[in-house]
Image (cartoon, rainbow, N blue to C red; front, side):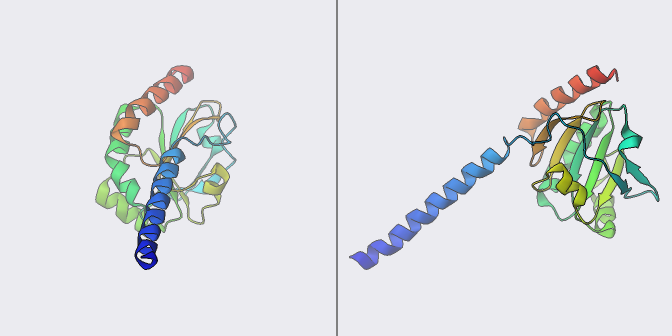
Length: 178
């Protein structure tokens, strides 16, 4: 009898662990970054498509959306149609942070799926992502015209989160006078 209950007990324990993991994945969406209300960390990174770099000074005085993505990231592919839509609808720069990727793979991915971003910066090693407190791609940061991080969306932008994100961006546009 005990031999038959042991597999059942293991199964129940695994189900409980699975449910706990799903709950923490849901909570992951709600974790605020410790950088909310603080300046974007200083950066000067190579651009993905142009032979120059882009840094804080280039974006000074401008609100922008920073979207962290990688060609290796399946969720980035899922959110891409909404990022493309966002790029058409907003009046502030949409900056792509290609994170922990190879330049060749990133350019191939953009050629295959399209390029919705105004600029791409390239963080091959991932140091800037660490400075931003990136948990994993995709993540989207809203930065106001003073260079302050106002909001962080963890995980893919979905149809459910898109409306809220656009409303937050509209507020940034209004504050920046865009």
